[in-house]
Image (cartoon, rainbow, N blue to C red; front, top):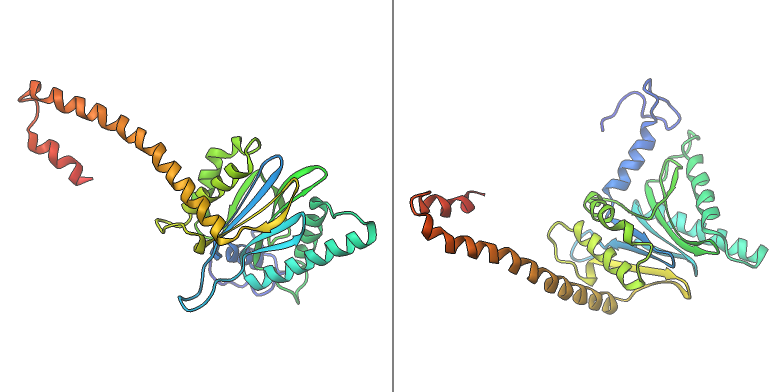
Length: 280
């Protein structure tokens, strides 16, 4: 994106009908570290990548507890996400004080979207540069919402935001049909696998990710590093065992071809057959 004469004010429309500063805020979400959310009938799992500015500093907190039944994962400007999570926490406290019941997740998401929309319609404000994945459980079941800096909100079965989130989306789109019937452990496993897709070859460990869970009979909480590392080790071992039979099945036809090759002498020079894999 480049500067132009229509992006100096959030209330200035371009001739093409665009608000550039709102689009810049949405671009800030894409620059943040990845955050992932999944839900089943009874549980919601939030996961994020911990990215530190340097090896000498700690990472910024990306998952916040709002209430016992609601949590949020953010991507983008962490300071904006911290302010919005505090606003959500206050709304939950005020609702419980007034009605002595927990605030429905959908109502809180609408209030958050209205707050974000005001910033797109006031010249003395700027849009919040953060995207929020809001996961929660209420009387109508488990919910996962995405709140955009533009003031829009969407409910998802599973979603990923932040840098390199497209790889995680591809994984989630391939698996999402089984999420509704998934158990808590399988949902966490899929979250870890999707998170690994965003790391581009970097090894997934408990120090580079944060996992949070909320569900029926389980208040929102962040899993400790030892538990996450144990889950990663368990899933990696299971994945290697599943991959071993597949590799054996691939090698057996290859061995059969090698045995048949001596009978077809003169069909092709052996030097070309050995060179082809090296060229790829």
